[in-house]
Length: 174
Image (tube, rainbow, N blue to C red; front, side, top):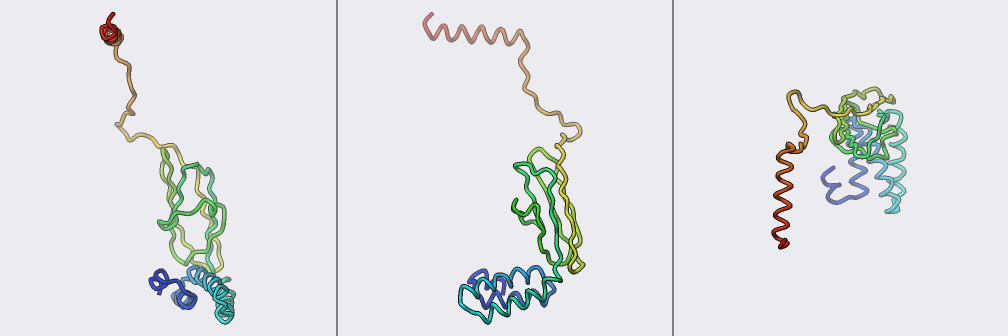
């Protein structure tokens, strides 16, 4: 059904998909699909489907597991992922409904040590807090020396300058 809905989104398909998710215990997926079903029903003028979806939403909402996100230092290039999916910045300080089970969060930014955590969200109606700490600056691996551009020794630098100047003088005819 999920593939069918992706290929050809429709109110009846998404409503059936929501029921399947609910039967599988994927309450957050069902919640999202029932919300989609309401939007389709309103668009299509299907009051019967809207009523059914709203009824199921009311029944499952108390069973939802939630993740509450908080990001300590939202760097400009910070990337936060939940189960491999990019979490939009607009959701970084909010509560997200999740299906019961283990959820992995990862944070990355250039020049910083990546961070990750796995949390269990299994208790119906409970909220699990995920606090993303400020990412530490990366350190070079042991034995690796960062490359620093060095100036040539003074004797080479002076001779280079002299020959360089002579070359330009010769080209300029003087």
